Length: 446
Image (tube, rainbow, N blue to C red):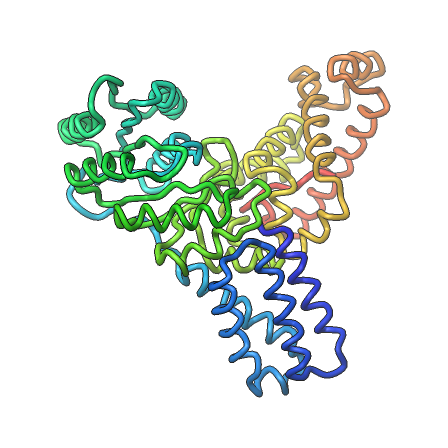
């Protein structure tokens, strides 16, 4: 979401680093570049002015001007101000109170409310150990009601039956009664949207709000719309008093202005961001981690969390045992590849590694993902016996595997050779006492 902004900021700091001596003039020139970068990222002009003024006051201090590494001091100040701009500390959903707690999702049509409702329900069930009950109040689009049923079905979550001929407030009240009866922890309400903010929509939402008194009112806003998303947030907040914001489609070509403007202009925290189409593609929003990403510093904590979620500790122990016994096979290797795939694309993972983004710019990330699929296709074309004992792969077997995977015998030979070398290296590392390598994530294959 912040690719262009990150590139421009890195270039600005690189120029500053090249100066023999840091002066107030140098810093002013750098701040001018930062200001332009923010404006090009579609950050609200009032936010940009406030941000630059705040950075200037701190950057003109003696600590920076007399520092041996003034560019690092300036980066530190910019990072701190970015964290403050993005909301400071992580603001999580408040889930205390007598169940069922009611979460009302609002937003314009096309912002991704229905998908986000399912994603949020999955997150609350998996990460917060809650039992959510879903309901669609979008009587104007029967397809939305059906979509929620399908998504909830994939997650094995219950959905209240919504009749398009029933008033939305009645549907929500009946769903609340059912949630109470069946002792659910949460009621998630997916409301109707419009192509633009209008009085009719807001009055309908106010009616639902007044009847149910939701604990959380979350705006689902499309980050691709930039400052329009900020304007929407202001309008919804005036009518409904939002408690938080979920930004969707942050994996697209958005310039990032909405995320950087929301907290300052609307005064409401971003609590989650949608990072893809899959139902697990909803991430808690951490201002400090996002600030580090914007400055090209990566996000190691999120990377570790993704690894731990994808690779259960018992599986890590199993892998270590296999390597100790020298029985790590292509079957086990395929399992490790699938674990890495759960964490996201290679490009996404590179962005989380400090310096990884620069490296990924020199690499073809699409080709790297294709390589993973190619390796998996080769292994899938083998029998279980062949996966467990590559030594039996003679010429005829390799030709059959090549034909089955759409590859060549040369590619099969190269994979087997690389796998054998990797297995030897892993065994050597284990003998030298490096079992911790397998405690968090698996080794990527190159």
